[in-house]
View (cartoon, rainbow, N blue to C red):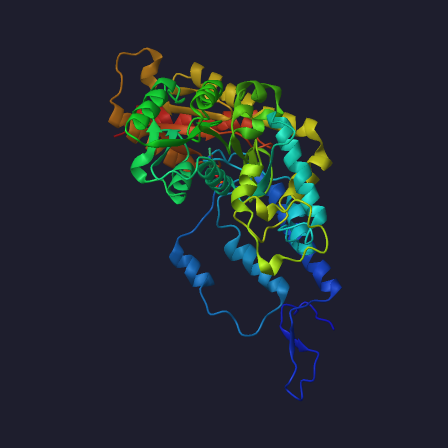
Amino acid sequence: MGNNMNGGRLERTGGNQDSGKQKSVALQMSPEDMLDLAKKAAEILVKRMENLPEDLAWDGDFQQPLEVKLKEEPPEEGRPADEVIDQATRDILPNAARLDHPRSFAFIPSSPTWPGILADFMAAGYNFNTCNWLCASGPSEVELVVIDWIRRWIGYPDDAGGLLTSGGSAAILDAFVAAREAAGNPERGTVYMSNQSHKAQVRAARIIGIRAEYIRLIPTDQHFRLDMDALVRAVAEDRAAGLEPIIICANAGAPSTGAIDPLEAVADFCQAEGLWMHADAAYGGFAVVSEKGKALLRGIERADSINLDAHKWFFQPYEAGCLLLKDVGKLEHVFQVHQDVLQDTIWGANHPSFSDRGLQLSRSARALKIWMSVQTFGMAAFRDAVSNGMELAARAEAYIDQSSVLESLNPASLGIVCFRVNPANEGSDSSLDEDYLAKLNQQMLARVFWEDRALMSSTTLSETFSLRLCIINHNTTWVDVRETLEAIERFGTEALEEGWE
Ligand SMILES: Cc1ncc(COP(=O)(O)O)c(C=O)c1O
């Protein structure tokens, strides 16, 4: 059987076609065609990576023009596969933020390593389903190994464990399900988090059945860290009102500012009150591989559960979330269910099944990418790459502090810097009106978007509009950060000189 580069075409083979009784449909290609296509795809990706620094950090298009190019009935007949790749490369793939661009500072960027990308390709090619040991013993063992690495970086006890998930949202949800069950599924349960927490926590709380009015957003201090006194008061008031507190969420890198909640104090409180502590370390968690990050996140190892995203600060392609529980049995207690159709216990039944630890039954082999990239580069390189983000963020803060146009709005935390254009902070009395400053900085954001190579985003800090850089790409250099800040200074100076309204 074979197929040339027309190879996407559907072929009917086998069976007695004449009799019409047996037909099989082949979606196959020759080995030569498969290699040619894989080479073509790899060349496109490598070229993209090579050209990325000179390219824009963002591209995109509106729905209507994209529909003109793409909206059609699925074709009845196929066409040459290389033509299909060409169209995808032309019409689809460029229309997206380049989150791995060295000047991509918006939201939480991601910069996957090539071995990680290849690992996803290979895992798809081998078609693993890591639901249980029988189906995927090698990939399951590698998941155990990777989970154990992360466990040790965090400083969790030997018997802690977990699983890899699609991302932070899924990991938080699995953790909350375990927490609710461990608390005996109270009817009037309450969940606490800071007003800076990622809304994935709110969503997970809603999904496990916490009523919206029982989700407490606790105030934060001047650096956007959970206010412990306010937390203690809220829990006491809720208990007095007959409610049943279940989970306290602590940020190990809040999304707006990178703020780290007082992890030791939260742990002490949870211990004293018999509450479940969850640490959302989706963004900041992998800082623990560096000495500085480990010190900043001290206390995280006392949480009952922790989520981290390897597709953020551990340089993996999407999707690579991770959930760790100090007592992994609490996860298995809720997620382990018997299925007759999966009862075959002829081999490997006494081994861990990752589908017993979370929502997914069919699961891809996400651990392979982490394992392959760590094996290829070594931990020293990962440590340097993580430290690079923190060092650049600190340097950006120092630059902002000495600028006559820029104003720091919060000390840099992990890899995040929050600031704005505000010349009044230079000591001039002509301080600008807050509404004016908000509009001015929105315009700065727009000018960077339209006129600069970088992609930046914003946030709101205590009702103040803030520009925000998240610097965690292993390819980002000081020149990338400095030139972006210089552009913002230039735009700010121009706007102020022109008396911008
Ligand atoms: C602190 C934090 N928590 C949770 C999430 C949600 O994670 P995911 O997008 O992987 O579902 C994010 C995403 O940016 C985050 O930054």
